Image (cartoon, rainbow, N blue to C red):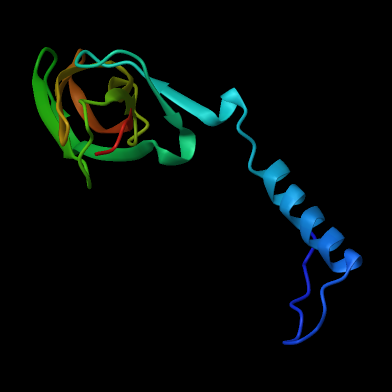
Length: 147
Protein backbone atom coordinates (compact mmCIF):
# COMPACT_ATOMS: atom_id res chain seq x y z
CA UNK A 1 0.00 0.00 0.00
CA UNK A 2 1.23 3.46 -0.83
CA UNK A 3 2.41 5.73 1.93
CA UNK A 4 1.46 9.37 1.44
CA UNK A 5 4.11 11.79 2.60
CA UNK A 6 2.95 14.38 5.10
CA UNK A 7 3.50 17.90 3.75
CA UNK A 8 5.41 20.44 5.75
CA UNK A 9 3.49 23.44 7.09
CA UNK A 10 3.16 26.11 4.45
CA UNK A 11 4.01 23.78 1.57
CA UNK A 12 1.65 24.38 -1.34
CA UNK A 13 -0.40 21.38 -2.41
CA UNK A 14 0.26 20.35 -5.99
CA UNK A 15 -1.31 17.92 -8.44
CA UNK A 16 1.27 15.22 -7.69
CA UNK A 17 0.47 15.30 -3.98
CA UNK A 18 -3.30 15.19 -4.62
CA UNK A 19 -2.76 12.29 -7.05
CA UNK A 20 -0.77 10.34 -4.41
CA UNK A 21 -3.45 11.07 -1.81
CA UNK A 22 -6.30 9.90 -4.09
CA UNK A 23 -4.33 6.78 -5.02
CA UNK A 24 -3.77 5.88 -1.35
CA UNK A 25 -7.49 6.36 -0.58
CA UNK A 26 -8.43 4.13 -3.53
CA UNK A 27 -6.02 1.44 -2.32
CA UNK A 28 -7.63 1.47 1.13
CA UNK A 29 -11.09 1.32 -0.44
CA UNK A 30 -10.11 -1.70 -2.56
CA UNK A 31 -8.66 -3.57 0.41
CA UNK A 32 -11.82 -3.00 2.50
CA UNK A 33 -14.30 -4.65 0.17
CA UNK A 34 -18.04 -4.72 0.75
CA UNK A 35 -18.47 -8.06 -1.03
CA UNK A 36 -21.20 -10.37 0.25
CA UNK A 37 -18.69 -12.98 1.42
CA UNK A 38 -17.54 -10.47 4.05
CA UNK A 39 -20.91 -10.81 5.79
CA UNK A 40 -22.05 -13.34 8.35
CA UNK A 41 -25.69 -14.38 8.50
CA UNK A 42 -27.06 -15.87 11.71
CA UNK A 43 -30.62 -17.16 11.93
CA UNK A 44 -31.82 -17.76 15.46
CA UNK A 45 -35.09 -18.88 17.04
CA UNK A 46 -35.68 -15.36 18.42
CA UNK A 47 -34.88 -13.44 15.24
CA UNK A 48 -34.99 -13.91 11.50
CA UNK A 49 -31.83 -13.83 9.42
CA UNK A 50 -29.40 -11.32 10.88
CA UNK A 51 -26.67 -10.27 8.43
CA UNK A 52 -23.78 -8.17 9.65
CA UNK A 53 -20.20 -7.63 8.60
CA UNK A 54 -18.09 -10.59 9.66
CA UNK A 55 -15.80 -8.22 11.53
CA UNK A 56 -18.80 -7.19 13.66
CA UNK A 57 -19.98 -10.73 14.48
CA UNK A 58 -18.81 -12.65 17.51
CA UNK A 59 -17.20 -16.05 16.99
CA UNK A 60 -15.99 -18.06 19.96
CA UNK A 61 -14.03 -21.28 19.73
CA UNK A 62 -13.54 -23.04 23.06
CA UNK A 63 -13.14 -26.42 24.68
CA UNK A 64 -14.38 -28.03 27.88
CA UNK A 65 -12.64 -30.97 29.54
CA UNK A 66 -15.38 -33.43 30.55
CA UNK A 67 -13.51 -36.51 31.77
CA UNK A 68 -9.79 -36.90 32.36
CA UNK A 69 -8.46 -40.44 32.66
CA UNK A 70 -11.64 -41.64 34.38
CA UNK A 71 -13.42 -44.98 34.26
CA UNK A 72 -16.87 -44.38 32.80
CA UNK A 73 -19.70 -46.91 32.63
CA UNK A 74 -21.70 -47.49 29.45
CA UNK A 75 -24.99 -45.61 29.50
CA UNK A 76 -23.88 -42.93 31.97
CA UNK A 77 -23.94 -39.23 31.18
CA UNK A 78 -21.92 -36.25 32.33
CA UNK A 79 -23.10 -32.64 32.14
CA UNK A 80 -20.93 -29.80 30.88
CA UNK A 81 -21.32 -26.07 30.43
CA UNK A 82 -19.43 -23.10 29.06
CA UNK A 83 -19.99 -19.44 29.95
CA UNK A 84 -19.24 -16.99 27.15
CA UNK A 85 -16.86 -14.14 27.92
CA UNK A 86 -19.44 -11.67 26.59
CA UNK A 87 -23.16 -11.63 25.90
CA UNK A 88 -24.92 -12.07 22.58
CA UNK A 89 -28.01 -10.12 21.49
CA UNK A 90 -29.85 -13.40 20.75
CA UNK A 91 -29.00 -16.97 21.69
CA UNK A 92 -26.17 -17.81 19.27
CA UNK A 93 -25.70 -20.86 17.10
CA UNK A 94 -23.51 -23.38 18.93
CA UNK A 95 -22.01 -26.67 17.83
CA UNK A 96 -20.17 -29.23 19.92
CA UNK A 97 -17.92 -32.08 18.91
CA UNK A 98 -16.18 -34.66 21.10
CA UNK A 99 -12.40 -34.92 21.19
CA UNK A 100 -10.89 -38.20 22.34
CA UNK A 101 -7.92 -36.68 24.16
CA UNK A 102 -7.00 -40.03 25.73
CA UNK A 103 -6.90 -41.76 22.35
CA UNK A 104 -8.59 -44.90 23.62
CA UNK A 105 -11.18 -46.93 21.70
CA UNK A 106 -13.82 -46.37 24.38
CA UNK A 107 -13.25 -42.62 24.13
CA UNK A 108 -14.54 -42.76 20.55
CA UNK A 109 -17.92 -44.13 21.64
CA UNK A 110 -19.65 -40.99 22.94
CA UNK A 111 -22.53 -38.75 21.89
CA UNK A 112 -23.24 -35.13 22.74
CA UNK A 113 -26.52 -33.29 23.18
CA UNK A 114 -26.76 -29.53 23.73
CA UNK A 115 -29.63 -28.92 26.14
CA UNK A 116 -29.58 -25.14 26.51
CA UNK A 117 -28.07 -22.28 24.54
CA UNK A 118 -28.63 -18.82 25.99
CA UNK A 119 -27.11 -15.41 25.34
CA UNK A 120 -24.35 -16.12 27.88
CA UNK A 121 -24.04 -19.90 28.34
CA UNK A 122 -24.23 -23.27 26.60
CA UNK A 123 -25.09 -26.47 28.51
CA UNK A 124 -25.10 -30.06 27.37
CA UNK A 125 -24.53 -33.70 28.17
CA UNK A 126 -22.13 -36.30 26.92
CA UNK A 127 -23.28 -39.93 26.96
CA UNK A 128 -20.80 -42.77 27.15
CA UNK A 129 -21.72 -45.86 25.13
CA UNK A 130 -18.80 -48.02 26.28
CA UNK A 131 -17.24 -48.85 29.62
CA UNK A 132 -13.59 -48.05 30.22
CA UNK A 133 -10.99 -45.48 31.13
CA UNK A 134 -11.06 -42.42 28.92
CA UNK A 135 -10.29 -38.74 28.54
CA UNK A 136 -12.77 -36.72 26.51
CA UNK A 137 -13.11 -33.00 25.85
CA UNK A 138 -15.74 -31.03 23.95
CA UNK A 139 -14.84 -28.51 21.25
CA UNK A 140 -17.36 -25.67 20.94
CA UNK A 141 -17.92 -23.22 18.12
CA UNK A 142 -20.32 -20.40 18.98
CA UNK A 143 -21.38 -17.80 16.40
CA UNK A 144 -23.76 -14.95 16.97
CA UNK A 145 -24.64 -11.29 16.95
CA UNK A 146 -23.02 -9.39 19.85
CA UNK A 147 -24.94 -6.93 22.03
